[in-house]
Image (cartoon, rainbow, N blue to C red):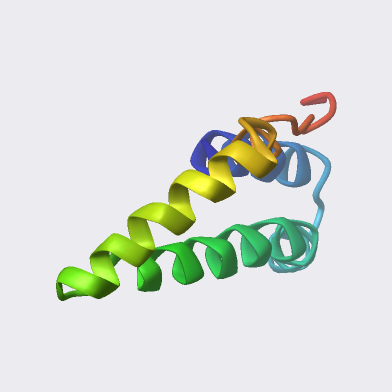
Length: 88
């Protein structure tokens, strides 16, 4: 869960900080690349999931099934394989 990651990384930045606004900026710079990628991927999948109509839904369902077969669970689990590093 990215919220837990955020908590760990934010705590690390704040625990080392003498300047809170600078710590918050450093936190945002560190988190942006990871969270932006997750948001972009989620948006793309969400757009496909919203397709309507019999043909579109059948195509969507087939594409999702095929993507699952080709990419496997690793496509979803890649986001779970993240190490926030030490807290302190």
